[in-house]
Image (cartoon, rainbow, N blue to C red; front, side):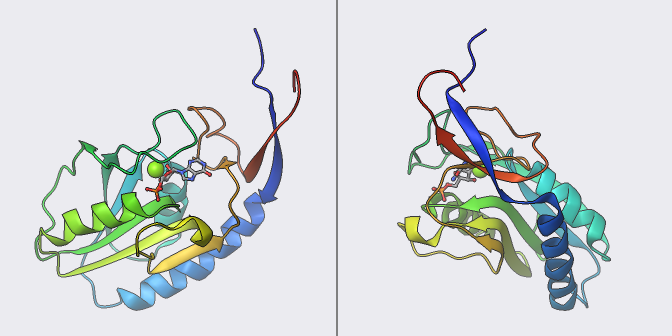
Length: 182
Ligand code: IMP
Ligand code: MG
C-alpha cells in the first residue's frame, strides 16, 4: 500500500496541550461560576479529543452535545460555504452554552455556527478554539478563549485530520510534504 508523501513535525506536545487546558478551564469556570448547567457543544469531528479533555478538567455541571458543520471536505482548502450536517439533539434557549472548535482558520465555520446558535436565544454563548490561525482570517470572528495561536501551517493530530488521517496522534503536528515516499 502506498504511503502519503508527507511527514509530521511536532508543533505542540501533548504535555503543553494538557497544561493549557488546565489554564483555560480555570478561566471558563470563573466565567460560568453561577451556571447551573453548561451545555458544551463540540463541533464534529475535529473537536472530539479536545472536548473530551476539556470536560474532564471542568469542575462544572456539564451536558455535552455535538454539531457537525461541513468545511474542508477532504481537501486543504476551506469551502467558505458552511452547511449543517448534524444539528444539536437538545434545545439551548435560555441556557449557558460553550462552543468548542478545533481550529479557527478563515473563520467562516465559527461565525456561521455562532450566528445559528445565537438565534436560538441562549442565556450566555461563549466559544473556545484549541487553535487559531489569525493570519488566515477572512471574516471577523474570534473565539472567547484560544489554546494556541499558530502560523499558517496545515496541522493534524489531537482530533484534527488531513483527509481523515492522523486524528489519533496525541500531539499537534504540522504536515510537511516530501518528494517520493515518506
Ligand atoms: P474555517 O471555516 O476556515 O475557519 O475552518 C475551520 C475548520 O477547517 C476547522 O474546524 C478544521 O476542521 C478545518 N481546518 C482548518 N485548518 C486546518 C488544519 O490546519 N488542519 C486540519 N483541518 C483544518
Ligand atoms: Mg472542523
